[in-house]
Length: 480
Image 1 (spheres, one colour):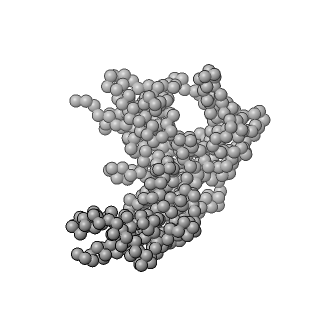
Image 2 (cartoon, helix red, strand yellow):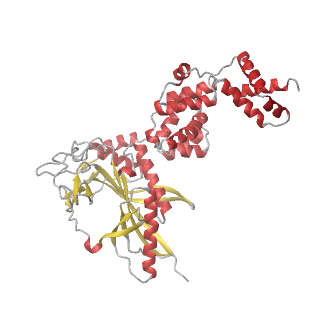
Image 3 (cartoon, rainbow, N blue to C red):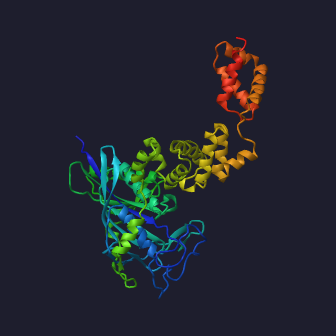
């Protein structure tokens, strides 16, 4: 009988904070920019340059700690982590080892067997390193220090996850919490959220942890899922062959869907941590902590509960709308104007999602105003425009945030309600399509759809389809 194995997973999640300047200097944190243009003596490690802590970094770290049920360490300190690498200009990184800012938290995730708590061992603040770029054509490596000194928090979980689905649920929960707080955009593709996976396997039922490996270079949920599944299989295969799993750091190659060893435990560097001599301890007063706590926004979990009570929209809609802060903000602001939550939800769930997919956009990139969506809903409800015109106008709102009323007036898109005009057009359509008229009178209901379409075409879309349908039925009954 073959042995059964359990996977044990813990994560180290690095998040770049949304400050405008770096953690210890006034250089810009903006993504991109020509190499080595967002730099100064501090973040390039020049002798004698002294760090000054960015207060906003501390506030973001506290906010994330509070939202993840952590204990806030009101006297935390920085340490030097010494290592020598070309993208590390000082030959050390300022981080927190002995007294991190947050400890002993948790987040709850949904699993097939119910809600599960994933423990957070600690959250600490640190600075990012630069970036090495390997030029194969010139056979050299170049370094860009723009990212050096960008503020990070590292969220270290307990080894509480058991499969890739739990890992993704945990990361998604963290991502949404941090985005709702405004602490980071958490764009994995830009590196503002990165995860290292610590994974081991053990026989099912055992309480003893197996030998773990650390997986790096994971910049998408798909890559993380594939890396976890690949590493689990590799370790089980080793154990089944009677071989030992080596504790090492491995790099995941998503193109090859395989990993390779970077360094083993024996090669691991001695970081020689010691207290950072150029920075004093950070004292977080009760008053400062209370101010940050009072500013905490409503997070997704609370929104879902409130939406059910306040707006009476389907659970599925609420789940989708709250899955991005921008979408939730649009929904609430538009509903506040027009007081029609179900209709706002429909526009966001159908047309907005369709256009986002078509234009390959994320929710955070939406630029149209709640005011213009609310006005479009009012125009449709009053019958000033029909549904097909409304979709046409919404596409312009989505792309250019135009004023819908002005656009409708300028392009003559208002629905024609003059019954005599409609009657004249319908009579002409009946006269020009005798075969379809005969088909309808002979019991073929589909013929009505054709006649309605012809009438709408003749009216240039400016008729009410229900009124067209009714008028056609009335006139077609004549003579039967």
